[in-house]
Length: 330
Image 1 (tube, rainbow, N blue to C red):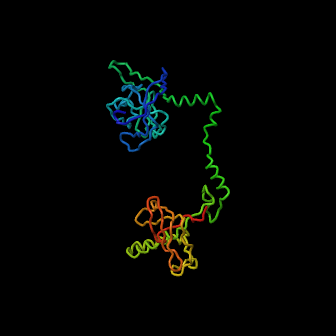
Image 2 (cartoon, rainbow, N blue to C red):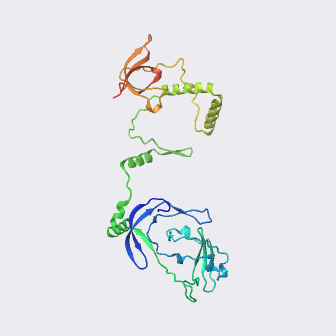
Image 3 (spheres, helix red, strand yellow):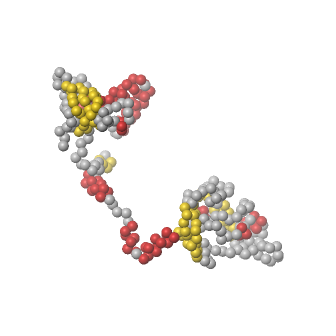
């Protein structure tokens, strides 16, 4: 960890070898990758466990000189690395150990395997360990496994209480059950698409009349069309594409309300809850207030109202407000 300048999570592991089994302190290091010296193919590694001492010696590492006596391995290249063994890759990382190419042994000689990390040589190399003729290097084979104590505890708990495995299944909340019930009752298939009703908690909700806001946005959009011809062209092409694909449709002319000779709508009255349109502020920050007074014209039509907000008392034209709740609503 020090050489890589990374941090790990402290834990305790049960370390098993062929000669002993003991609990040792360790760190869990996640999200590391490994690649061969001459390769750009990286392998994601599982969580690593750190140790102060590795159960392998530098003398166990074969080198290129060891392959001189084995002509069938002449094409194998083992890079010379002047470093100790600092990483052991186990069977929990099969991609790094998967054979891509194998050179079979000849006689009693070694065999070689190429993986994504490079070549590895297995078998007797007949190297001399101390310079005396006939003295062969001794290589100790070992089996190492490590497991966190938390994992062992969970395994033991399941063995002692097998009925607890049923309790670990994630249950559905009341909201999930309501959603599934709503989906099963309202799902319909039309034109190759499935549709379900909106999963609203209040089924009797009344959506606000946003026509005033839509009119303001349409007016602003029209002004931008006049200023920016390229935007107008792109917008027209985009909407034409939506309509041609069936994602949108034009409102029939007979359903469009004429602005000049529009029908008379309900007047605002004291007690109405309204949304105050503010073109200079983000839409999510518009104020909500309650109408305290209205000013009708000579025909009895209200053109502006007084509104009490949490912080002030203002007067606004009806074109700048949107009705959220009528005063007569319960």
